[in-house]
Length: 428
View (cartoon, rainbow, N blue to C red):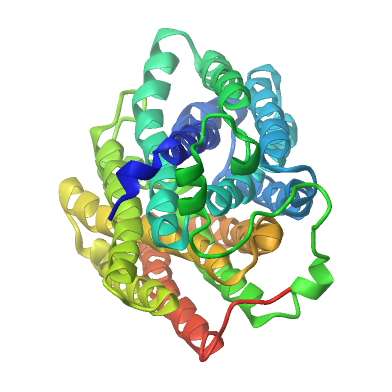
């Protein structure tokens, strides 16, 4: 449709967002892969580990509160830079701590810093892409969560075996500073970028949504919370984010306890699960973008894709019947891929119905809500698994959790459907 004549620098921006998100998820997943090692090193119970995950999630929620509005005020370039500096330092600091309390402290700092990733990335997509391409661009950068989750089970056990658990944190944490150099060289908003053509600039703004100056137009949260549009994203995150965090932080342990998977070696099983999520993220973004290009109304295309995703997650309830690890991998892979398709579209809904000047703030609000849910869910997971572990049937605990996973997306979609009845974009 003529896009090649306009230039493609916006996809360079998308690549930067993808790599940052990949690093973000490598850094946060290291602890899950080192869980068996650290449990022995520090004598952790499932509840201890759940508390550490809870601290991360609570700090992540607080970080969303700060970074969402902060990035709308100071701009994407500087806001993203500050975020990755904080989380990279925190990731490396894990190697220095000597106690369970110390892990809680550095996990908290990591969560706070990592919270800036999605408000900045979604805002950058809104700045650099027209609506018909945003879900695909979001799906591509969001697939970094999957690639990070694929890379970590291969990279971390290798570092652990070759050097030790401290080096696993140091090496993975340092990668963020390499990305920062490229970000600072190549990123700027379209109106100030020297490498973008006038044709591409016009294409980016073909929705007639004018470019917004940075630094002066952040909208108070108290006003944004009064809009149903904001609550669409809040519901979409608070009911489903905890499921993704469960996949990240407990799947390695699930495969280890249920199928005796050796987590001291690179895991093809986990790599397959997270590779599937890459296809889910990009495929989910592509599907709604395709429907829009076929003439579907924007919101109808997003909601249809979200409903399809909810159906795709449902089979995870059957994971309890899997007696072969590869059957479990197949079932969980479909559900995890569907979550990423959900994520690509729910993030894009923000830029569909929220003005650019408030996108980062709304992502911050919804991200905070999702993180609050993710803060509370590990308490349930940890206590549930400890209870059934003591009873000698930890599998029953995972079965209950898989039922919750299977139903969460239908509940979220139904509420979103009610909220979006006859909805129009906010006019500020």
